[in-house]
Amino acid sequence: MSHGRAEESEPDSDESSERLLTGYSGRLLLAVSLGWAAIQAGRLVLSPMLPAVMDDLAITEFQSGLAFTLLWGLYALCQYPSGRLSDNLTRKSLLVAGLSLVIAGFAVLASAPDYLLFLVGAAIVGTGAGLYPTPARALVSDLFVERRGQAFGLHTASGDVGGAAAAGLAVAALAVAGWRSAYAPVLAVLAGVALALHVWGREEYDRPNVSHEAVVAGLADARQTARRLWKNPRLRWLLLAYALYAFTWQSAAGFLPTFLRVSKGFPAGLASGGFAALFLVGAAVKPLAGSLGDRLPRAVVAAGALVVAAAALAGLLAASGTLLVALAVVAFAGGLMAYPPVMQALLMDTFPDGSMGGDLGATRTVYIGLGSLGPSYVGFVAGRVSYAAAFAGLLACLFVSAGIVVRLARTG
Image (cartoon, rainbow, N blue to C red):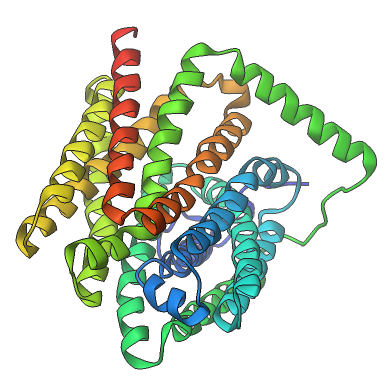
């Protein structure tokens, strides 16, 4: 089965060229990027709408945190198997399957009359979202060689666009028709993307091999990968540092708007604006941080980003007044979002070339999975003490993570 760049065999120069916006490659790039933006918007729109969701479903902070943990945890668990499946199935098969699950999950979330069905929707969304990004990035890699960097820049930026759009979508939905209405445009876009990939994609659909032998071989491969990664002491420390960061990031992504409303007295619209700043600032600083990491030791740049985020979070906890809080949120977003591109490059430097794809999927499962516990922690502490106390705990995570990365920088 071939995952090669089928468009190169086309005699039509318009079809065979690496076009970012037109032609076969451009259409598919825009489709998978729009799909990723819509998935991110649908997952993240819950955060600024959380108080309304909690009131409607009569749930506590801890219960809402568990829903985020379930969604992100299943997303994490699917990273490694989706990476392996993307090598054995056509990209189109996994992409359309993932989108179909996400559509079903968001439909359940939007119509859930109680907490149990809300959790079911979160589980379906997490599973479908976990199947999508690896084959999407593999498809981009198939389509582009000479312009691969530009293509990946457009594709990865679409996630930040989705996050920023989630804030505006939440404000509009709450003002017009309630939190459930926020999912209508998300479902429409996702359905359109699934249809576009079905019509435009030249690959055929195929099914995974679920025989006993294939399952046993897959489990053996996973165990072998885990043992090999665990034997690398430097990688163990990098994973711990990244897991502490992911714990903080997923906590902020889940509860920053609610923190701003409850602890800082922000109105809903302004709190959503603070949430949007995470992604708008992220879209600006990620390329700069990546470029800086190419010129300076990556561990030094990563540690610096964490120190900035920690200092800004400390300022946010202490600040009062709209302007000071807003400045602290922007600085926090800058430090927090500068970390991933540098740290992911540092991880890739650590992996052997022969197993880089599988190793990346395995490590993503670990740090995203551990990070998914963050929203449950915030919900638990906020429900029993306060949101300020919960976010103070995140400050400790950032400092410990920075200390680990500094130690790694000193030891080379």
